[in-house]
Amino acid sequence: GKATTAGSLALVDNIAKENAFLIEKLLANNFHIKGKSNLSEWANFRSINSISGWSSINGQTTHPMDTEYNPCGSSSGSAVAVASGIVDIAIGTETNGSITCPASVVGIVGMKPTVGLVSRQGIIPIASSQDTAGPMGKSVKIVAQTLQAISGEDINDIKTKDIPQNLDQNFIEATNNKTLEGKRFGLLKSGFDNKFGKEFLKTIERDIANLGGTIVVIDDKRNYPSEEEYFVLLYEFKHGLESYLKTAFEKKKSLQELIDFNNANSEKVMRLFGQEIFYAAIEASSNKDKYLESLEILKASTKETILLMDRYKLDAFIGLTRGPAWKTNKKGGGDNEAMNEVISFGNGGYAAIGGLPHITIPYFSINGFPVGLSLIGKPWSDKEIISYASALEH
Image (cartoon, rainbow, N blue to C red; front, side, top):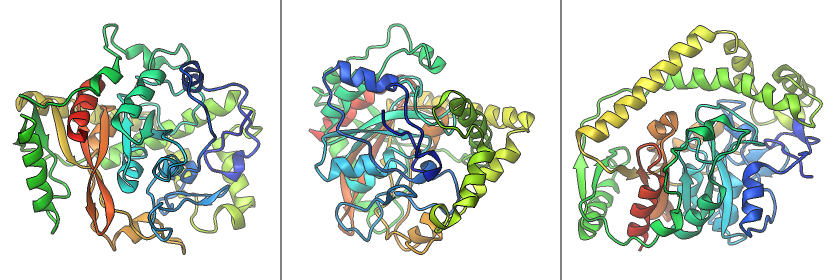
């Protein structure tokens, strides 16, 4: 009965015919659905100059500590609703950073589960190989409780068939953990090369050691396959979106029709940034050979990530999630231009392309704004990384 819009005026009449699978699971587990939150329009996948937290339907989501600052995206409203005390738990979606970045930037817990653990049925897609929904909450415990409620196989999402039959999905149980005895954590170096970094690293090393664990410095000289990832997202976006629109209430059934709508309503929809990613997606969608080549490169990179964990006998990776909040660029020009004014770093890209579980918990601050601590594990190690996060939170 509510519109599913991706934050776009183009989909304002796209009334859902039924609840998403994960919503039905929440209701069955006695959760109350308070409402929908604002997001970065098209999950920041309309323009390279998009502004996190802004949508043509609801305008700009602001940071709960200072309205001049940005809450990151694309699940901006979900993070801010929790950080502001409106709700204790919210659902976000992530393709690459859209849960973990806003969670870190506003100072809450965010969990990107292993891709396939939670059904994407009913969610407007970007890329089927990376998309997932996940919980964002005030504590590790409520995030675990929510993940336990929404996880599980759905016949309408083939990816959920990958869930191992013997997978322990009692995520609440993991929040009782208060030790890291014998656990080994590979250090993700991004963010430790600034004036705050040395003190942050000392704190992490001390806290891990006090809990019985070890920080391991790893040698990883790989270049992130950003071009290949971008092409995979472009290719999968058009095909996935049009597959979604085929059965949706929305009358527009193609990416081209959405582009035409945006052009016809440019004063409202594109006053801050354009839609060059949409055009790029149309161009990419016909190049299946390049898509398959790019996908293989991403799979090889993920295999290397897991081999790295095996080589160093790691239980998880650990590192800083994202840099602190930046001032929202209200004149257009996007997040990247605005972020040049702050200390910028990030971890989690390899988790995104590999579908790996990633949890962030509030841990530090820079210039008064939160910075989260990330734990990233092997596929289906969601319960384990929740237990590590719980020990650190305790």
